[in-house]
Image 1 (cartoon, rainbow, N blue to C red):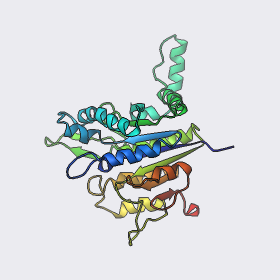
Image 2 (cartoon, rainbow, N blue to C red):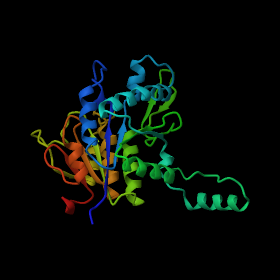
Image 3 (cartoon, rainbow, N blue to C red):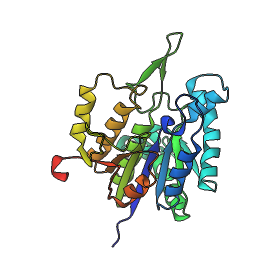
Image 4 (cartoon, helix red, strand yellow):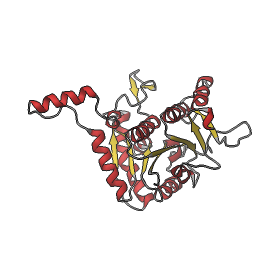
Length: 287
């Protein structure tokens, strides 16, 4: 029996916009969309809402700017795909099934003939996701910034000019969470997570060549050794490596590739990769 696989592709703002001019890289949108159009059971986690909202002159808190910019991001993706794709703005809680305590409280409310306290959002999302895939579409998603104030990376904070702490949701960890939950709850037999990192062809060695495989432990070691690593000055390497390691440790087939690679997503969707993509494995025995 053929293995059913879902493929989650995450692309960041630095891949979708020119760092200096802030102009949209339409070729990158097209490249990723063309690959996902050929893939079954695809999910695209896209950043870029904040930059596009900022470019459009939207004022307000980062969460407000991001939410406004998301509308335009979807317009660009729909154009790149050549058709309208379904979208989802979610919070970190939406991809976690109800706990035993929450299920019990819902049961008590049912006995009392009251409405459930907790919605089964994960179940609702996955039911709709299966229907989306059935009709050959790709779900495009991002964190709902207005509701997800702490995001999935509470250790990553920014300070406004007034000194107020601002939390920015992290789509690397968001994509890892989606991947892990889809696999853990058997939504598909296998799950591939591909995080795209600008023009970097995976993880490079000292000679600039792509390393075919790296372990989760190796990624965490790279994080601990690089004290200068941050979202801004290393293209988000810290959060990318953390997300990739976490997903790999949970059994997800995990990869790091380039947003400019015309085959990276296609490779990840098969569970087998060649040049230009680094596979992250849980143990050295898998290398």
